[in-house]
Image (cartoon, rainbow, N blue to C red; front, side, top):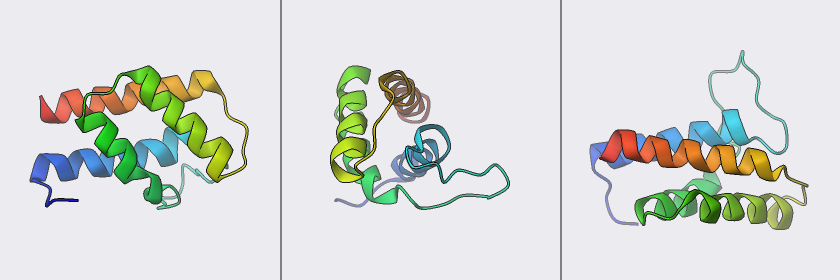
Length: 96
């Protein structure tokens, strides 16, 4: 990955936190914990999808695929779509 500017770094971190707090297919989120890097390995791909302007359905499908194929977890497609929209909204808020 090329070097990120400050706004891209902010988006990257926001996606990490969205995955931990809002997606969390394995249930590690705890409000009392400041932050956990459990899902950070999935951030680069989702960051790229967001930067490329992929729509919420594309990002949600990626989330679903990650949970089912990489984690062996069932997912909630409604949650995946909600999280995809959070990622897109973060991108629009930070980069646009």
